[in-house]
Image (cartoon, rainbow, N blue to C red):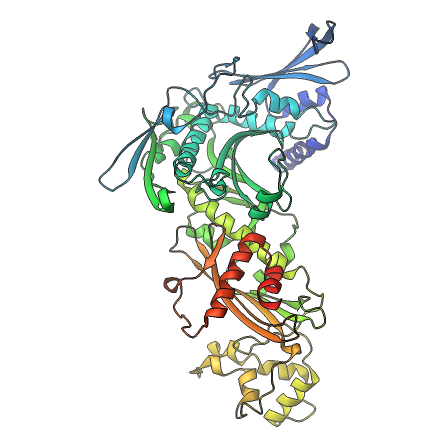
Length: 620
């Protein structure tokens, strides 16, 4: 019987999640509220309201659906034709600021920056006497849309849209709150701490990349999202093709010219894990924030009278003792778009509670192939007359996962995760532009160690040269020839170890003993692009991705041009790897190649398009 009930509950959850596609119907809204264990009541007595009083003095009669929990009351006014005309949200512990004169939260009036402590951390006290930043704002706030307006806007289309999501979000906060712990206030206080961190960083960094939250450690904090008609606290932290979008997207438009705008939704969810007290933890947490001249400074951020509101202790949670559902909760960051990240990086940060997308998304095929074999091999169309071999590999055996949500162990997890997300978003963009012109047929890529990395057909010339070099009979199969190229890969499992594995490969073996004149010159057929994720810098605060690209391509003069460039992605920004970042530095690089490499990296930051920048820097 319990199995049947569990299956039924799963079906109801799925049905609720799909309800955003249903047409607006007051009776359906009432059933959704009842499914969330909220009380409902429909008052059919005649209320009346004047629409557009400057145009008409006629009153329109309507009915009212009231949805109530322990802390919330939602009144929905509607006509007989299921037209929603007004939504009002009231909360037990929130003052109704009907005049809308809530001052903006800023450093001057609400934050006191004290002296440094013995460890060199700047002490910052936040005024907690008034709630200056809340997603439950009322009145006519211009800076942040009111909760009433958000709820109403989600009910103005033909379908329910985001209203079921908003209702479930409010119901969850209501259900997990207790007489000792108001999670509505708790979430507001959390937003205040994050906003303080944002303001401290933008105080000395007024560039648009900081003020828009693209470079700040915690992004840009906002309450309520009118674009998606969602209630809550949001963190805007990245835009694809940021320079292009900043240049060409108009100020009155919320839509990017290209790509996506990434944001996180600060959510509270029921949890079976030990109850965490984020505000109490934060009193001792160290915030590493970008200060003047982009120097990292250490801060301690806390409210001036201790954490507000009262938080549960880790020993005996006040929520667990007094919450009617006896349930713990956890704070999570939900992403509006999946981000492919390495699972091992999350584990390194101590994050084990996360959610990933189960749907096939745009980059799934690419990252699935990298997960299967750490490589991707196809033909690129960068040289139209002669396709170039494209080889993508990662030197680290780690699994990518399409991350959609991550549960936080502390608030300072955010200054680790957000730069990390930026790095992987940019990596995905680079790879996506690299493979967009690939042909459908794979090829055999003989890499540095001479290992064939993809099954396919050797050229007849290669087969004949290999057979002649090894004095093999003509009846040797292609599979047997292919096995020779795996010598380097299998050497690690041999009892007789090869002393110089980098010199024992198919290419060097075939060319061994030939003079420079006898060795076959590079030809158009040899053109290739190799992209390698070499390592992850776990010692850097932004978990930089170390990347190398090399290749041999045909330029506009039909000349073969070789190139090699190494760079890192740090907080979403690509930059040249300095000598301190790598063990081996080639001192023989000429100034022209260095200048081109710097130009290449600068072009990548602007376009995030490897193919376009390769053509511009090396081939034109």
